[in-house]
Amino acid sequence: MIGCHCLPPWGAVFCQQGAIHCSGQVGPEELLPGQKAEDPWGLGSWDEAGDWDPSGLLQSAYIPVPRQRCPPGKAGLDEVMAAAVLTSLSTSPLILGPSSVPFGPAESCCDPWKEALAGPSGSYSSSSNSGDWGWDPPSDQSSPSTPSPPLPPEAAHFLFGDPVLRKRKNSVKVMFKCLWKSCGEVLSTSSRIQKHISTMHLGRRAELDQSDGEEDFYYTELDINVDSLTDGLSSLTPMSPTSSVPPAFPSLDLAVPAPSETTAVPTILSPVVPTTLCHVHSDHAYQGCLTPGHPVGTGHKGPQLSQPTVLKPFVPAIPSGLKPTTGIRKPRGEAKKCRKVYGMENRDMWCTACRWKKACQRFLD
DNA sequence: CTACGCCGGTA
DNA sequence: TACCGGCGTAG
Image 1 (cartoon, chains in turn purple, yellow, green):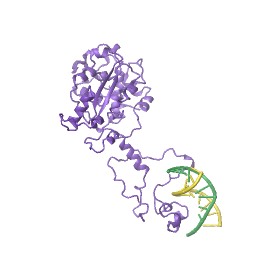
Image 2 (cartoon, rainbow, N blue to C red):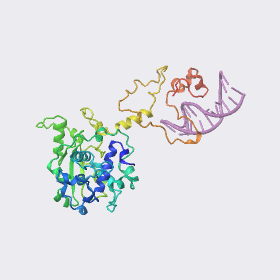
Image 3 (cartoon, rainbow, N blue to C red):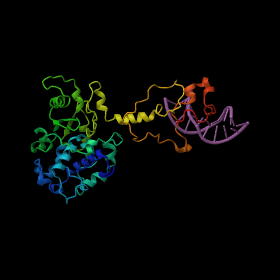
Image 4 (spheres, rainbow, N blue to C red):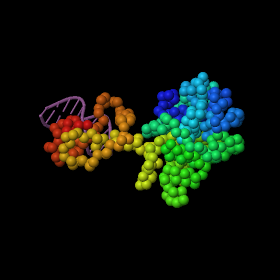
């Protein structure tokens, strides 16, 4: 992985993760000027850096903004920036763990940001963030202009490092975070979050308990282990049986703002769908590459895929890794060929090229 | 493994 | 022009 500025919007989240991680080792002196001065959330309680447990959301209060973006000479973390940071953090808590794994507590604190970016981050990129995932970078992430709604007291306590909670090691705090787009509400109990989703997003009447379980798809459980650092991923990955949301990165734009009642399940897969569709589409180019003069309809597979708008050029599913031995040989065309269309029995209907075992000229690829 | 697409060669 | 050996690939 590379520098933050090169990353797509969601890459910025990762960068923050790196920063988050490092904040564990960063002393107060590392904080940007103004960070303490503003301290709009009473973060000034940072005074026990040594005692600081670098895992968990507690660190969210101390995300050092990358210096490249916010040089010390500048104003620092003003309210807007802090809100933005908190927003992006609150929408992507599950990736906290992995990124912190490769870096041990003994990591140098000289330049945490660089360390996080350029350090032994081979594992950083490959193991922790599923870099292969090809969905669109959620556009929301790039513009964290919508701060999260005010957090409930319990969440605030947790997030901002209630001293009492911080002392409690080996404790796992479970929070429930709304995954609804631009919401990110964090509540302490599943019933609360369900009620929140039901009433706020699904438009159900609060008094009518008509929950059909759909709410489950819209929140995720933050199983935050305050204790273990190396546990990062594993402590976050296991989802409660009640929560159907996969341990996907919540920074994803779920892109299902108005889910239909009919298919609730696919919605949880929606982050993957675009990619899948893309590959599927390109892998089965059968429908897509027919020549206009397509003759008989024998093999016609009915209406073509209505080109979904989500399909974009993307990474073309080039059959890479083909053996370079035979030089330039086109991968086998997937279009209909005369043999396929007419069959061996109607060989006389084939184009001459096909008859001669040459490249079919009727159904060009 | 077979079926297939088709390159390269031959008649 | 007509055909086919044989290679590489997909299933």
